[in-house]
Structure formats: C-alpha cells, structure tokens
Length: 126
Figure 1: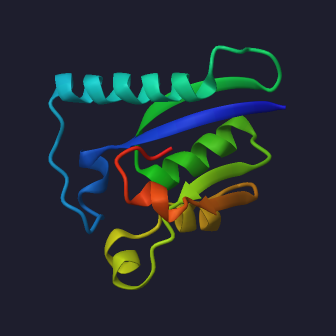
Figure 2 (figure 1 turned 135 degrees about the horizontal axis):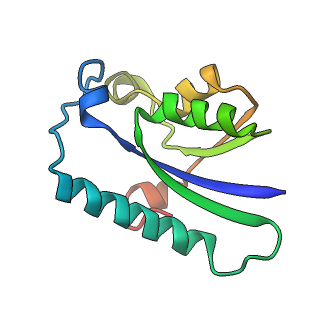
C-alpha cells in the first residue's frame, strides 16, 4: 500500500466567483510562504520512516473538492480518506462541506471522519 498526503491551498482567484467566502488574492511571497508551511506540516505528519506503507506528500493550489477528486482520478486511487468538521445547519450552508463535495464527485470510495470536538476548539488541529 502507498499513502499520499495531499494538502490543497484554496486558489482565491479560482474560487472567489463561486464561494460564499471572501478571498483576497495572495501576493506571490505570501503564497510561497503558505506553500512552504503546508509542505512542512505534511512532511512532519509523514515522518522520516520510508518503510511500508510508503508515504508521499504534495501541496497543490486549486478549488479543494474538485482538486482532490481530480488528483485521485489522475493517480488511480482506490480510496480517499479525509477529515470533516461535521458542520450542520447554518454553518454548513455558509461554509459548505469539502468532504461532502468530494463524496459526490470522487472516482473512488471516500472515508470521512469527524475530528473530535477537542481539536475543533483549539489552535492545534491534528
């Protein structure tokens, strides 16, 4: 088995026209810093051990749900596993659900898991 850790940074230009959230375009140096930070976080989660399961990491820019589904399709994934905040009601209407969109558009099964509340209310999400 191989494990791919993917982090999608929202592209403000690509998502602003369709999103309910307001995005401010990144300056090139800000975008580079965000890409480096995300890559560092993924590298920490992947660990230094290259024994099976082999872990690869990648950071890409785009619309989250579409990019995840396209990445899985392009790479022939058998399963997507992802976290969800589990929002409901107004919060779900305003923020939407990337996991829900991925479930609807993915080329393979999607396993979603909700973070425990203790992680949602702290600045140290796993």
